[in-house]
Image 1 (tube, rainbow, N blue to C red):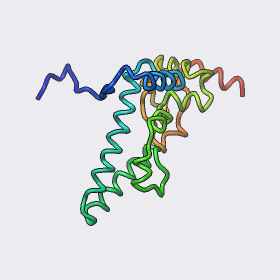
Image 2 (cartoon, one colour):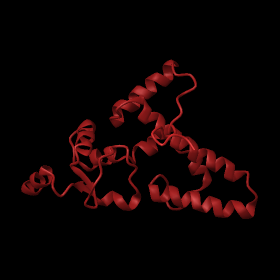
Image 3 (cartoon, rainbow, N blue to C red):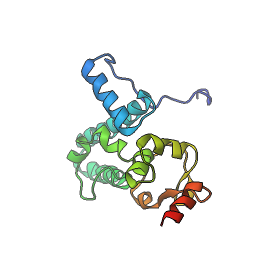
Image 4 (cartoon, rainbow, N blue to C red):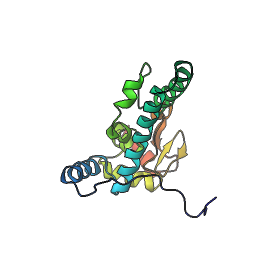
Length: 168
């Protein structure tokens, strides 16, 4: 069963961690999306890699089974906001890590203008000033679903909410 105090790893490190091009790309993504460390980037890359692997394995299934499984995967990715409603498996195969990083709570708080910088967005989330539908969320890496996107705002007890109301 395993030790509950030692959860399974959610990421896979790169096979060649010292390639110059990979290091430059990783550092660019870390700065652009305000990630704390490369592990957060590797988690996002692993999630995208698993979705793409699922799509490739669906392509190998027989036609009658494939249709149901394909529909379920596409619906799940639509709910997460990674794909449009009329997407195909080719769209799943063309997913990038940037698509997933754009769906993180930290990025959406910054894009909505609730924070001045991507780093301030992270701080507001960790300190409990951001809520989704009135429920406080303190994980900057939380993947925001499509239906939750409009519900992002300041927490009810946050002093930032009072400041925002005074400005309006």
